[in-house]
Length: 141
Image 1: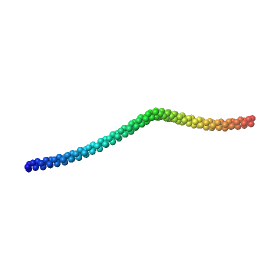
Image 2: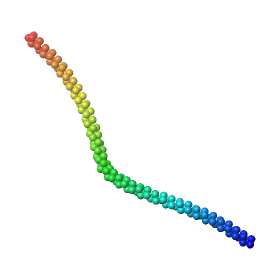
Image 3: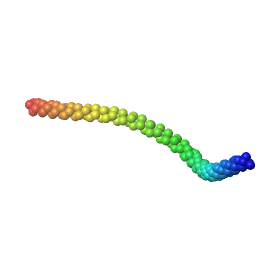
Image 4: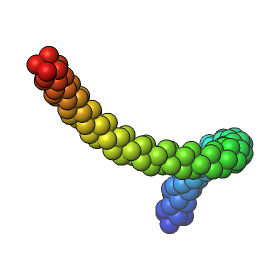
């Protein structure tokens, strides 16, 4: 009988231990199922966000293509304008050189004019002297 009581107590202890294990396992399973549900919900949210981001990506890709189509002609226009600017700069340099050369020529001509004026004045004075000499000579005659 004692042996049976001992076996019975062991059986009860084992049964009690198994119940505790079962409760822990059930609790753990519930926790894991809860975690799985939360993760699944999170996955669904992320999928929705991915879809929204893909929509934005599509819109942005379309906008980028549209802007690239606009950029092409503008780049050509910019290139032609740069060429015009370079041509105008070279013309500006050319006209600057011509202008400086003309300024030198004008200065040279002014100096010549001043020299000629002085020479004309000297000649007038000389003519007046000669006219005076002629007049005196005639009066003397």
